[in-house]
Length: 73
Image (tube, helix red, strand yellow):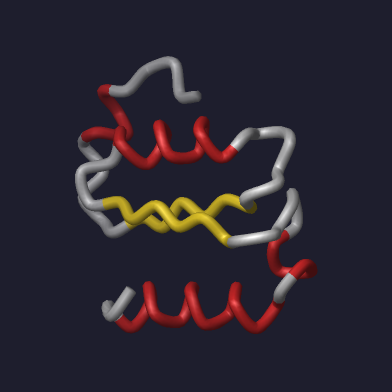
């Protein structure tokens, strides 16, 4: 987790923090807590994915990232 939360808290652009459900490092809980630091963050948990979610289910990953970039996430 980010040690200094003041800097990320000032970041105003949208942020997508995406974690694989089965990721062992960093664990999804750490990704969720990291997303909470940013004022305009979305947290997404990719079901069944590990540390490389774009490889585990590329279609799900691409749909989620595109939805975020389109603003419909």
